[in-house]
Amino acid sequence: MGGGSQLAAACDLRFADQGASFGVTPAKLGVVYPSSSTRRLVALVGPATAKFLLFSGELIGAERALRTGLVDEVLPADLLAERVRAFTRVLVARSQLTQDAAKEFAGGRTDRDTYWSERARACGDTAEGAAAFVERRAPRFTYTPAPGGGTPGEPPAATSG
Image (cartoon, rainbow, N blue to C red; front, side):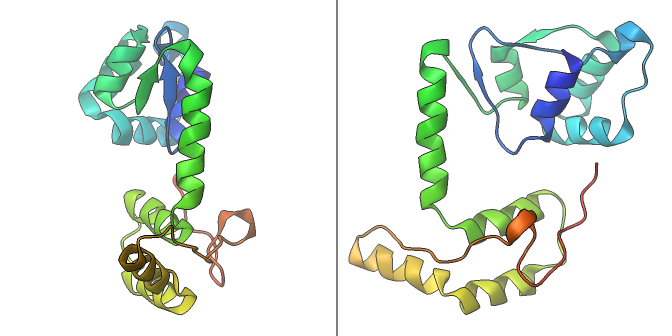
């Protein structure tokens, strides 16, 4: 249970079916939860909910997980797979450049505003997005992330974990 919640907390987005349960259970076993996982959980759900989960080891349902930010959407089990497929199509159609920069910024990396602004101008995605908006058509973005998830020409951003 705790390993699954730890894995979920490490994901950028989380979708769950209505019957899902979540828990962080090391207190039931006398295990010290890793500091990197604890920081990730606190950043996701806040200190109060993280402490509740860590101290008690109690399970919470999908609706409470949604309220606390542990999951992003809760759906009936029979609709979950199609929603994830549909949302994946949305993400693929959006600017990968924007997503890469947002992931860095949301993860606490605040020293790369200039880098990302220069990348946006250099790759042409900003101009393409504006042109597509004016022309009322879907944009054709060209930026692609570097292999391995790093930024082209840069080492991958440092992560906590």
